[in-house]
Structures are given as structure tokens and as C-alpha cells.
Length: 208
Image (cartoon, rainbow, N blue to C red):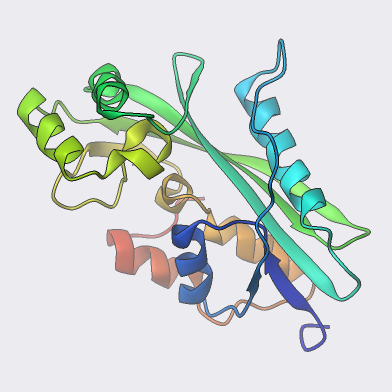
């Protein structure tokens, strides 16, 4: 089956593309243009779950294709934090999370035209007590604006995260161990062990 199947990534995210390459997968990028807006009364888990499924559907899988769709959000006190629109919003997000815990949730939807498996992967992240000056320097570098919650766990200069529980790759934007598990159920073996990739990035395994 693996020889006949083409993998479609329903995302234009450079980080997700990088992670798929690091686990040795060949794929075609087919971004999904959908409206990302919470419905009235929808929980963060329901929202990110629905977004992943809608991205999968919008990618219009054809026979012989497996679509990988993902959507990642940051949740603080039950409120979803998106990508900051400007410097003021980036500072506000980083200040609100400083020294506290929040959740990063990724909805995964993986499958063919006829069969889709989906789940929500959650990582709890505790931020360190960084200073206002560190926030200003990070924002001045232009780093927050393409990232939900305004930060990257892998940023070694700012190093905003004190510790986490769960998959650090989920915080990057794609829980590759769970992805490999689901692809395996579709008959696709991931060439590179995701745990090795996690260790290269963070010095330890995926945690999921």
C-alpha cells in the first residue's frame, strides 16, 4: 500500500513541512483555505477537532492519497490565543502566560477519501518568569507573529518554556509520534523514528 499512496499535507506551515521531512516522508503540500472561527458554545477541544476535520475535507483527497491535516491552538484559562496581530498583542500574550501553565492542543485528521481518523493531542506548558526586557527583545526580533500564543518552544535565545508535560513536538505544531502511529494503521511506515527526531530537537523523546 505504501508504494501506491501519496501523502498530502493540508498545511502551508513551514514547521509542519520540516517535521514531515525530518521523519523521512515525501509529500505534496495542498493548503486548506477554511474559515477558522469558533462556533457559539464550542470548547477549545471541539474547535480544534473540527478545524482538523474541515482542513482534511477541504484538501479534497483523491483515490490513492492520504491527507494529513492539523490545527494547533494555545489555550490559557479556557481562552484560545491565536497568532498576535501586532507587537502590543504579542507582548500582552507573553505577559499573560509568564510564570504560568497553559495548554497547547493540536487536532489531527489523517486518512483517505473514505476513512479518516482524528484526535486532539494536548501538551501542558509552564512558562518561565521571563522579564519585560526579554519580551521586548523577542518581539523586536519579529518572532511571535506567525505562532499561536506568540512563542516557539524551540527558540533557544528566548527559551520561554520552563517545563512541559506531553509532546514538545505538539507545541511545535505536529505531534509526530501520534502521526506515525496513525500512518502505520494505513500501512505507511515512517522511515525515521520520530523519537530520534524529538531527541535531536529537545534531547528527549516525544512524550506522547
